[in-house]
Length: 477
Ligand code: GLN
Image (cartoon, rainbow, N blue to C red; front, side, top):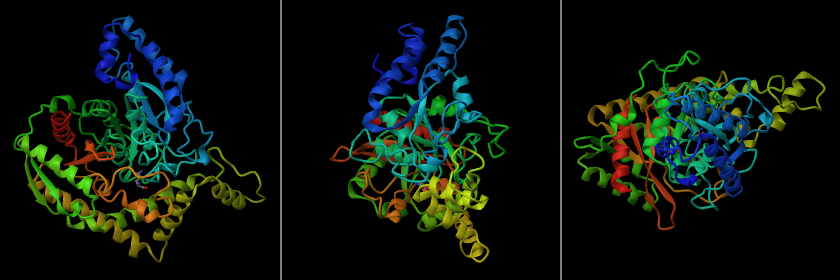
């Protein structure tokens, strides 16, 4: 079996035709992941016991003639900010280096209930803060498409395992672009669903009003199938939506004639030229398929980065307060008083980017600055959301770049956090508005670096978004 090319459907076919058992597949996938991982460092750790046990349950169901679920036997990786009971979950941080969660995230429960087999946990920026995976306390990930380059971040590991073929699909998390940007950098499909579409229960909080769990896949179909399993209302997350989960595959008819697509002019200003050309060619493909493509304007875009980095740091400063050396794992041993212990635990445990954000966030929330920064950023967020609402009165979907540039070299932007923040200039708006958005591969640069097309849609219109993305994928592959 060619592990690196499996799809959800081909796994199912292999099981049905008895070419392999789920357990054989899991053992082979674990072996392959172990062998390939040193080149990318995309997995932080594998979870063989859990994987083989999940596979055994699938085989038992098959033997009894029961339906084993839509993800039966599928090797899946999970970003290490998503809790897995009994399996170490580090969030890419020294603070949680040995943390073993006592419960599973809802998304994890659901994907195993659907027959999915979790191979292991993927590397990521510390507490999902970053755009290159270089903020992981355990070392960076290399991009399988070009090993001297970053895979993007913060879900760099989850994108890389799918690109490398050491998992069929994976889960990541997105706060301001952490699924779409690594998907683009590694050349795979990445989906940020509508805010509230997937329960955040068991997702370690970075900026709660922006955090999303979402899937990666080598095809739109695979990513959509994983989303369908993990989506839906969950009692454990009051912000999870009641809206029923559609059957996404039914939306993928290939027929996109008459779909109105907007190209926001603000998103085409600072693009590298090859990226710009590939996005333009992508728009051309969709118009050939019968879409009506026109220019639109999202005027508040210029303020998105500033607003995002105020809101996300404010929320992060509050969410990260829980890592105090009393709860969770790391506790600095050399302190005399309680406040010393807090200080040295946090001082030793957090990396530079987390500290920067805690300081920024504390500052923008402090009494004298709350109105000037935090409140203003919230107003801008409302304007950005309004831009989208107005645009979606004219068009059905928006087409944009994911990032101004393709994967950059390891170390290239490390000394300049502002440059790093610019990676997210085109992804942050969708996150702030809470609308579904995704990255779908749209070709490669002359140097072979993947480029991705971003599709954004109305709240809960994942079906329309997938229809476009899948039609595009069919037309271009
Ligand atoms: N790169 C952005 C940041 O550093 C987005 C991170 C994310 O989406 N988790 O905040």
